[in-house]
Image 1 (cartoon, rainbow, N blue to C red):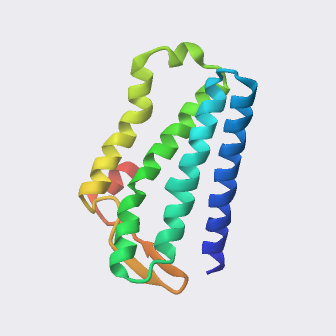
Image 2 (cartoon, one colour):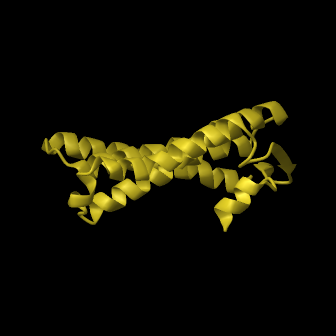
Length: 148
């Protein structure tokens, strides 16, 4: 239960930080891709990571835990956003001008999105633990090929 409370605090802090940077950007009326990407990253971390994980850790039953874990497919895009943000932060503008770069950044997230949404090749059904619900990693060739 303490762990899930930390997730709730993380949700609030990520959300607050994203809102703060957004309004700071609006007030100064500057068009900054770094700030916009950071705001989107904060909101994605708040919702796609902290809130969803808090939801399935505290689910009342198997069905609601399963629903939360299936909603958790969105975290693949958080990783892509983090890479996108890092490229903007390190001023790789030449790389970001190419459309192929965005395919390499967001393409794997889309592929994993469909694998996770439609199958149980990446994540198993919910497992009840002492601290709440969690998920396992299936023993499948796909997982082994990704991990090695």
